[in-house]
Length: 187
Length: 194
Image 1 (cartoon, each protein chain N blue to C red):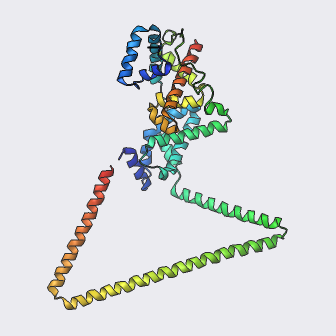
Image 2 (image 1 turned 45 degrees about the vertical axis):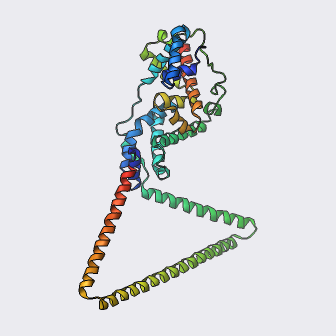
């Protein structure tokens, strides 16, 4: 039985403090994901807390044959999407858009690609990536953050979002190419 | 081999391809400057992305979350509030329908009162019947225990004291054995689960 399942059983048997160990294990990766998808630190802290509270109240419905992290991030993803919908962000930017379905982004290498290595130092590139990431559509940004910041596998992301692995891979590639193009435009 | 598409480049850089596919890409890269440059570009991007700084989290964040968690009492009150609100809403709706039908407010209240008492009487009837069934079952259990006890009592008149002591001793051994056996089974199941 994995560590998460043992902790969950302890919480459900009345040992509320065992939940704090779950929080300490997942607070950083969860906050990392939420802060990069909502963009504002205070709001991200509120959402991270809200996700843990929702997880705690729904703990009885968690099925131990599944991975807890997948379930936790599913709750987080739904919370973030509700937030963006309430802000009346164009549904196209949340759900699949023409730009994100792969039909308009180039699949082949361009003949002349400017070199990021020539334009940026590594540290400078990292700060620019943070800025550019805020302008990537949420549907792509979320998957990109999970893959390259939370370091989830494509299969784990597919399970969280309940979508095919191939679609996840395509969208993450699109996010990276979008970031790369915007970085080229910055210089 | 044709030049690589962007998706394959990323899969190659993230070690998501089979060793055979990787080998064929490396053979292509040895001869294709354009693809080699594209791979290096994306390698540089992935390296930058892989070490983005983590945003700061307050030191006592977990304690703050624990304080904000609902208590069992809080959750029970929540249920009570939900139940009361539902009842109140139901009563209000019923009154509105009644009044819209043209009857006076006092008639509407009398109607609601009658409805509530009918429901209370039905629940009381169910409760009384359940209570009767439970009492009957208890009586049966008591009678069965009395029969069992009489049976043991008659055994003691038939059997001599030494046999009675032996039987009692055997009963204790068998009960202890069953108890330990169950305990071992439970421990084995827990070890298997973990």
